[in-house]
Image (tube, rainbow, N blue to C red; front, side):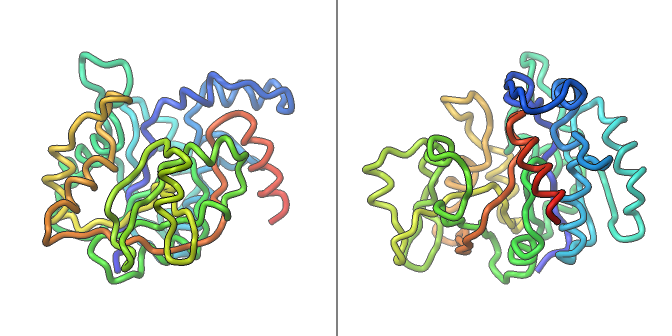
Length: 277
């Protein structure tokens, strides 16, 4: 069990800014083009509010927001939400290398966070995205399990996304005990067929993890560069970590949708979801 979660919010929202959707008005499109995705407002509250509310309801006490160097608006918005009585909020800044124009990937974000808040190097903590609205129950599962390292392994059929979108998600290759063996990016139909779990399910990651900081730090620090994205991605660090015979990451089966805020078309979907609750 852990009481700390790291929320990755330093991305540049490139896909959101490039996308087009005629169902949203000009004001909302302007927000999408100029704000971090997690600060786009729904019913006068930023998207991050709804995630933080679920994080609180799941029992977390500490949240570390990983942000870009210009994060004044981010901090101002979270301060305005007045969550400090229920949640201890800290910030880590993911700096961009001088030879790049965008952040160096999720593993780099976590490494910089562990350097700036060094207690993470010796304690247990969870990680999630800032643009996915994970349920309270899923956040409880990742917080309360007794595994040293874990990942929520989603039944792909439970994710309510268009088929072409969900088919591009990385699948989790696991053994019979649900120990992670590998991530398969952009899987072919043949690879999918070979990696069904014992219930015939395709399991995918929605980027919600638990780490033992002492075990994971060196692997995150020394993460290789993904040759396709030219970034340091957490799956690469995890694959190296589990190649050590004494370490593991347990996949925890789960079957539910994870609302996602990737492009402008998702704004309408999220708004309907929030209005219905």
